[in-house]
Image (tube, rainbow, N blue to C red):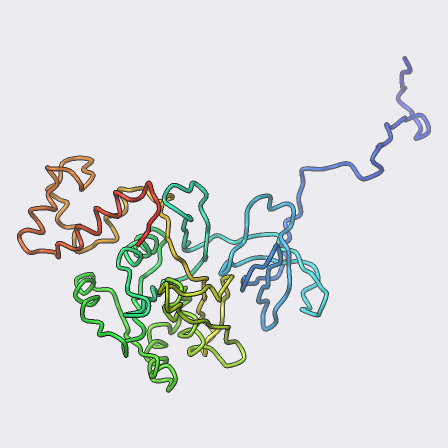
Length: 336
């Protein structure tokens, strides 16, 4: 065995060659302190369109982020070619901490959680008053997701020219949720759009709703003409809308802090990722009645105090039915 003395020369040192011909790996990663800040506007097949200052930049996720995915609304750090020119590509090296998250699962028995939008301040739940008919159970599910994710809800009722909003207002009036009612004619004349903009000022608002409720039509009335998206119509036979929005997209309004995020229409909104004990928070009209419930009450048992609370006239019985139906159907597909 060869031994080296105190005064070895470089020629005396034998290093083992790297068979792959590349540099040895290291656990030390660059900090990218000079990375530019940006906002994710949309995601399409692994390519992310980001807003960096006043220009849009195409980017991809850096390998060092692993399985952590960026979604629309994320604040990210980017390096590489940030010119925004055609055929250029930057890298997202860091995803900043999120202030809010809107999550959903495909069904209540689907364990795979999908992050739809990040860092939104408000969730606009869009529902048509007719064509298609309102789906209060879906509205309740969106409310649960909003409260669980740290978003403030806003109820937007469309197509008031086809049916009055009285029934829905009676059902959700006790929740003290801000709401706005629009009609198709008003959207053509910009009147309703101006009223909706008042609720969006200084906020990032995610729009969610069942297919065919007029969500994208409403968004198109809010944003500049060159940013408008394709819309569809409701099938006269099935009463269902057609998916015309296939990916979430953040669009700017007039103010620097005013953004709307149009999301694809949904036909179900799974809540498998939400603890059942937190569902009651989406029913503030019923929550005070739980003070008399036994410990670990499921709110669907004989000793539940909510029955007496509703019987005394403190809340609408339909709301208690909605809560219990929501809790009971978390283990199967939401079909309303």
